[in-house]
Picture (cartoon, helix red, strand yellow):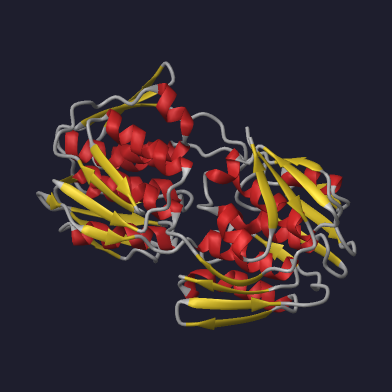
Length: 416
């Protein structure tokens, strides 16, 4: 795997544009299976996860063209209903084809997704919800095979507000007969974006962004064009970078409401954060102030920004406490931060961080996507140089990272 060689203590300043949201693009790509003809998604980031999802769809018979962040998906010639284990293991989000394939094709067989570096992501809520719509599911030899002669609307209550389960059930229900109600639904902005695409296709979905989503089934959906929302996690990462490097960055292409938890926490720690339309300016000098942080489902503080914010707190003035409530293994970056001089103690799902004046360059390794982002930011702020291994993890969620940060003044080199 590739590595970054990063020279720290470079003040970052300038403008950086946020790419389209990876976590919105993936379900939108899956939703294209529901429509007749060619669906065009604008603003799709060119990332490893996007390419892997495209491979899954092409395996089913879709024709795909990807140019200048515009993705064309033609699903008029689906020929396959089974996804190989090899493709499924490349990316967990490929399980999002479950709902739309049942709705459009009446059957689908996928490999049960394996474990995840940051914690378990069980399929039980997906399966439970689809069964309420009349889907018959068999689980054998590590595969999930789902069939439905006719989907019918139903009442679905999710035990936990799972984002993936909410999306899968929505996509199945749009072509079901009757009305489906999803209670305790996830509220993330990416689900609202999925609702917007489905309704452009001719679906009747309302309530996304709340805990109750209602779907009136229709007979047919039609292809359309849709622009993906900005990536709130990427935007938050840039904002943290400005604070960690004592910089001044204008982050463009953001939806202020989506980043309000990060805005609040950065201000609490002493940073200057000024939203203006579809951009936000972040500047800071001196030491950040210690604070307490707890990850929660949206609209709480996002777990996907916890590693980056924890990295910021390693040099904050005082003692901070970070509690992770979403994933049980989301402190894997801590051991690497300690190699850089951080003082962190882990107690279960809580990290206690005693701030140090500065981090030191070291050889460190990314264990997952967001841990990689945290170490990348730490290297930018550290004394001397850092070698960050396994940066392929970062490629899963950040488009053109080197180019964007060099333009802000970072000194880094990618080495194969």
